[in-house]
Length: 206
Image (cartoon, rainbow, N blue to C red; front, side, top):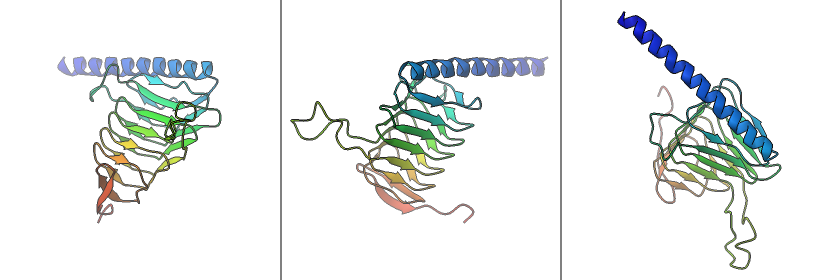
């Protein structure tokens, strides 16, 4: 009797998760269409929180991605923003990557996140300054724009900020609260503001 009840509970939870993902997917596709953008969201990608995709560029999500996690910390509804702000801008999320809640990814050119990455809550990834330093153009120009590339199996801890022009190598870990203003090689642990390399991580199986 208990076993049957547990199976019923699991089936009910799974059904709700499927319906939730379907709604969030439809909502994101509608937002993207209104903004005249493009969104590739495969059926195998799961969304546990709302996803906002309202830029006029391209957002491409690979298979088996998980967007948000209902048991993790959330501000409000935990919404994730993926905004390719202008025509020709690209955001790419790699195979099997998993994010927590309240993530912001904004691209004026391109932000590419590799496969099997882990992204903590309140992480922000930007490929531009949004405003010029020069006071005259500060309210007119988006400032400097430079692509962001994050490798495979990278772990970005809670509240990490990744800024324009940064490349992060495969397997690297960025500790919570770090601001990544310059590129990091593969297989290191980095922390701080700005992020600095603390040590090299042991290779898998070493």
